[in-house]
Length: 482
Image (cartoon, rainbow, N blue to C red; front, side):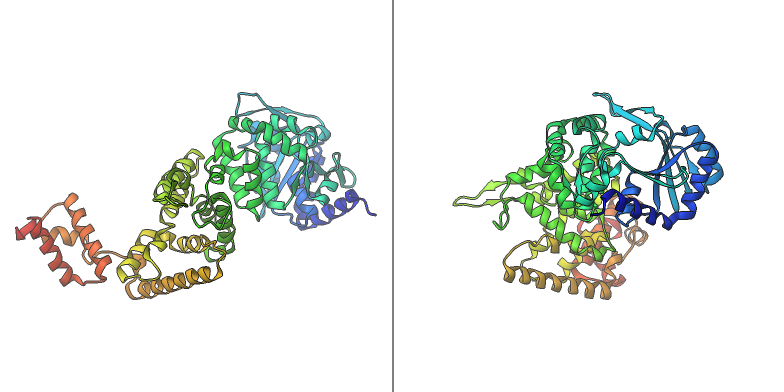
């Protein structure tokens, strides 16, 4: 039977032809300067899997200042933002490279930043890597490329299992974020996790508290944007990691879904996420906003849970509470303001469709639905459809048909009235001229009045809008008609 290491070496070397010229020229630059250079970590793993991309990681015995000097001559562009950690990045053509000095790093128990020590051997560098599947390297400056696999990563890759080069406890103590990386690789590559790792994560989950919110956010985002985020999220919840940065998610396990068709709201939320992902083609592909909204849309339920006399539970206004909770949590995780606003808006709106019964939508209701969703209208379509997780086929078909009808009504009205650019029939300048007033809050009130009138009755035309405005002003004893 072929040795997994031999197979991996052959696959990795074969994959290098994708960027052969760039890789060879970089290796030659380091070799001529008397340094060693090896492709390392994720790119080696991905090369073996046949998915080598345009971002390549290398390790070297050259110090950062040496890499800076070499890459300045070799690359089209270069930056030194990671120099303190031994990493110099550069770009040549459409390929981005990061060259990192052999190193070892560890965290002080109370520090969020690693202490970096540069090493002298690739063996020492590989020993400090997070998982065996990321501890393989291709030495490029030897007479012929040499595949290095000191910890049997090739075998683990073939078995699709995550192990650490040394003890899991020591690895996670050095960098607690590696515990979250385990969840990411489970979600990205459909791996299983060695029992030793699971035990270590469960026992050390609290150690994540020393990691900055930004690093946690980035790792969580990678997990959520993976091919199968459910697997990674379940690991985060079951080991206790999620409780450190997203406690609202495991708390959903305590609630019973009001439809009684799922074990709990937690499982329902994962199903909604799965279904939203299946509809992402409507959004142009993988979409962080819809995935966050699908995962978090019901986080207000635990706080709004009420027992119904005679049996059952209710979660009145959980969308309002959930939107506030979502905004607070995403801000704490340092998501950008647009992401925070968009996701919390979708959480707030996710029940709006169900507030209109079984299809008795007036034109006014449709206009308000479009206005409130704004640029998130297609996101809301996806979220609303994904939120239907009933196992009752008749009910599911009925909900889908009703929403089909709503979307058709939306499309029809948008074509008739250009609702994506909905405005009152009079602008602010016209309002001030008609009422003889200067810029003030009254202009805003008049504008809102006309906008509501537009939403309720559709396009009025300037003449009717003027008459309605003057009547409104007269009732308020404003303007020339007072």
